[in-house]
Image 1 (cartoon, rainbow, N blue to C red):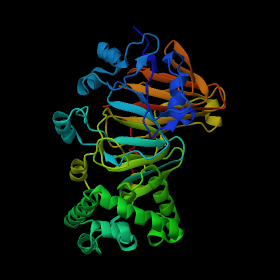
Image 2 (cartoon, rainbow, N blue to C red; image 1 turned 90 degrees about the horizontal axis):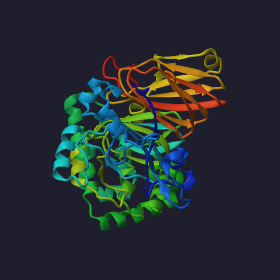
Image 3 (cartoon, one colour; image 1 turned 180 degrees about the vertical axis):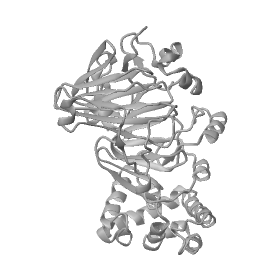
Image 4 (cartoon, one colour; image 1 turned 30 degrees about the vertical axis):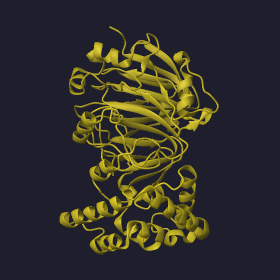
Length: 451
């Protein structure tokens, strides 16, 4: 029987928001695989490297050029019969590298039921029927807009950003303030539902304004940001200072002049992730990534409902109706990775403070392990699991072994490891970093990482 270790050739997407030429980690990783027949164009943006079986950009076996989808469908043992049966003979997750130069669209991903409805109604814009919860891990410093802010912060901005209040309308703003006043942090389910309804109303009031009205208000907003600096937006509120928000408005207006997203940022948490920090977004969570290189893992879907910062198809009625309108500080979306328990480090790895840490979201489709091996000869032996894995090297050189088969690894190399296979990573450089996405249904390897 074939040893279940397959080097993958992975495709890269060129979208306008991607980093350009060799600045893009997605492009550099794609070009590393010698058989990829891909070369980097200096002026072209490269946004995403896809690793998986999704039909929009399926990975291939470097050696045979067969798609990974064909391989796992022909040999169900590669994923385990249980996972193959549950997920229709397709990898349960899609693993990506994103290289973000400018803002992605303000967006959310539908839950399973809505995805099925949207795909049936509009397969051109909603290409599959799956949900898309996703996890983001920073490979370089990252910033983005993620989830609705605590309500008291929105109250602050409605009081201190005149162009926002005028756009929403005085009656809508007052009704929102009256509903949530003194109830912003209530745990009472009835009060929370009233707050969510009020948030939906005041958000929809913004999103349904016509473009000319938004563009006129945006000019006023940008002028305030230029003039007020650290005093902008009443000094910014508890989560972000005024200068930070003023700079953000000016930066985003330079990318999407007069866009509704310039006002949406007052509704959403503005988050910065340092290298190795992560957050988890459930289906129906609103977000917009702004800059940085990230590892992204998600359920295997390409469904996006967009409503700002994009020239692509926008579906504002669906977005405003689908969101849960949950509100919370960003600390509740950030993850707390833990030591991965199913790996054995050799003495060299231990003595050099090597690590294997687990990012484990509260869903079964995927988890991710980041392994850092410090020093030549540092080795990590991963126990066999009852499910498939995809591994990408993001820095350094080394080797990967499954049974008698061993292959060299360098930054950008991607491998599929089949179910029930013990896997060994060994460093051949001072630092060797890999990320492993995997799925295992029984006894999910956890200590759930979402805080």
